[in-house]
Image (cartoon, rainbow, N blue to C red; front, side, top):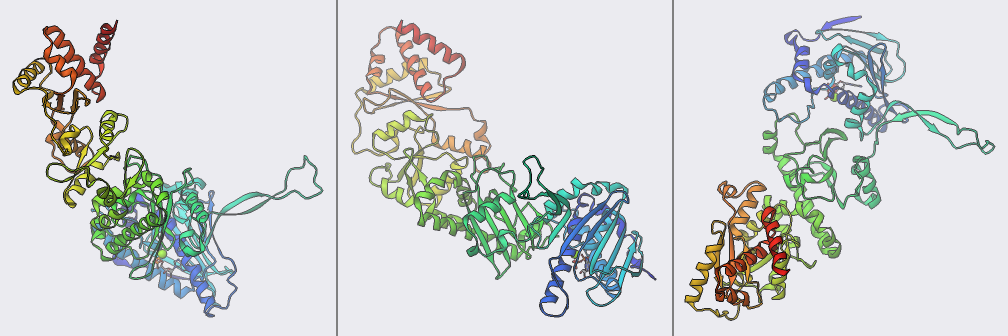
Length: 628
Ligand code: ADP
Ligand code: MG
């Protein structure tokens, strides 16, 4: 039997491993199963090239708990190690790997943005075990070896009588880590990290029901048998060629990824590159609601089918983190901080590749089946609009297929919209005026006023729409957006001829003074306008600029804080050509005049949903009094 010292100079590596990686103890299992997988796939390769004269068969990696002995076993049927190989790979290579890792980790630990912790490898076993044994038999014709190390830098290495090929790792679980002797905990970890690993993983057995034999009686129970409980799918959809997959395969893989998700995805994008970096994956567009934050962190990052993390920040562009699915790339550096990651050349290329693929897919859907694309628009617009705001490259592409729905359910691209309204909707400076509403019900009266004049009204209701509008106004020439309730339509859009006021300047002045006596001027700015006689007598509007700044502030970015603190100011537009206004002007008694003005103001507020509480109660009471 040989004994030795691993390396005296770094005697304290084991306590270090425990200390530094405290919160990440669970990754030991991923590391050991990764090693078992590597060993199995290496053997497969050697058998394929004729170097190992063995029957490869259908190897399985087994994970076993021995609760009484407080042991966890990881057993593979891979290529195994000879005594010399244990000396070399475990005592030297694995150790130096662990050492190097800790060197790196010490610095980056301060930077809380560490992603997975790949690289610690075999020695991560000591995070949870007070003693580790390796019993291993090489595929070569040499005796098996038995390595034991109790966490101090000394180990023992001797021969063992194991005859079947492969490696068994035995962890003597430490007192602080007995959770790893619980079946439920191990099962949880296997599902989290190893669900799609390329070699079958067995954890216990399960009972399978067999068909009843023909001569069985009705009351006889169906026969059962115990079979291996395989916890993984070694051939997940993303590792296959897109041409080998049908729509249903993508859907069923989605269900595999998100078993608790009952809604089907809208469509998917299969990623597959091998130059200048390696990346495979499938991204799904789920039906997205309006809440942007709820949707994040559903994309899973893998390296060679080993789960790493579900935080893909920095790798996938921000606006696409609302999607779901899997990305698998060996070319993403993992034991580095996020700030380093974002500066990494490969990662930048990966991020722009993903953006481009998503834009191309959307574009081809738009071109090939416009109707279908329109139907999906409401569920995908938030991603597209967010992308247009945050990535200029994406904006350029999406500008061709981004849709602008109208209140009547037609969909225009920006270009189509411009074409449609160029002769009818311009302002005094010949800018195109794009009218929009954000809520069909609340802005109903304004929408119908605009439609009566033959104007198109868009329905833009996503939470970031004010940002998008701002972006469009700055990146395109001679356009402006105006919400239908932002101003009177005739003030927004140039008409062929001016409407003449039925009132003289003097009459207007008296009227204005009368109105301002009754109307609270700290809330409403009174504006007299000559409009068509059938336009509303009183109309409340909120200046576009002010409203937009407030909205932008609520959804983050843009706008300064002052807008949030400003009192709500509205304009009260009074149509001097309306019969009722003439009547108010001519009313002799002050009391009656006041009543008419109050009632009209309340009606205007009512149509803007601004009449509430006590004022609403009083209004209703007054109205009943008037009609009784
Ligand atoms: P890495 O996997 O990155 O090489 P590890 O520390 O995980 O580093 O493992 C060190 C080495 O020990 C491996 O490269 C391999 O040669 C050997 N090894 C570890 N586990 C096994 C195993 N189950 N079967 C055969 N060899 C193994
Ligand atoms: Mg390893």
